[in-house]
Length: 394
Image (cartoon, rainbow, N blue to C red; front, side, top):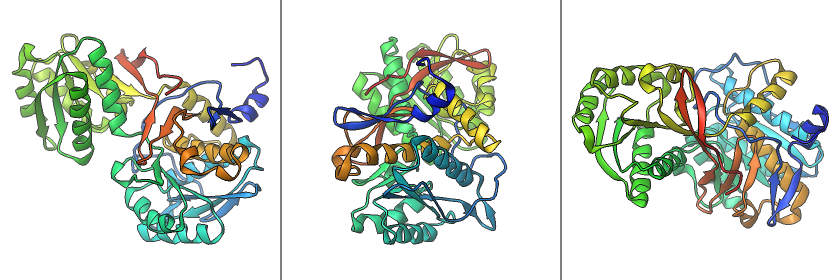
């Protein structure tokens, strides 16, 4: 960190500098996952927020579509992301963009209405929505109008040319952990995965990454809720045929999985357990059966710094996905400030150099997916230790 006052550091946190013709969001530290939070997970109590408002007073109009309400009341996730966007506008100087904040009411119809309103008001770029169905609905409006979207869904099927995902994708987690395991001499992996969409995607990504690395996928065991024990027994029967097990499971279900591992004699000190960023949760880190396990995740420093500034302004804790809104708004402001009329063109948004935000380095691919700089951490005594740092460039 440069020797400057905290106030100056906050103002300069997302000042843009040119990197290879694209704007990079400069930061004093790179961040990561403290408590990964999928949309719909428990969140802090919401505070009231307007369904639609504007932030900033810059000449470039950008829309931010969020689930500010759900049913009859406010959405804690949407409100937290809206607050993060306000923080980004204030820290960027507030005079680069005017942010048009729209409520999609947590519905596809609301997302379509919000996108139509934003475009009619002159938005050049749409940030959000959060949920997959809402992203698809907004894209139906934005695509014919030639307006790019930077969305927050983790569903890769929502991505396409002109619809870019800023979220943490399970494909990235799987690729990173396989690459690291292979670099450490692991040759054969078994998959212990629930029967759900997340695990379907994770398993497919692992198979592709393993094939690229020459790692053998010895067995894929799928289980229904409450029925993990039999699948764990089948993997345990492989014995020395495998040297690692990949488990793409949610944090809430991991205590049951850990119990099954122990009951079947699967010892994490003898066979390497691998997971995804969903494991960065106290419910997982404290499990005896997972001590020594590895998983891919962003590093923590940047989120911690963001959360401190968020608390200072809003007197509450941000949801984990709030940094997505913060980084998206910061990027939009930086590009407006540095890239002129080309600011939201495809070649700028998909720059190979990428960008650096609160959650570390990232870049968008032409197909709408993303690459992120992820660390690999090891679970030790209820906490994590970085064993392979996140890259500082892509």
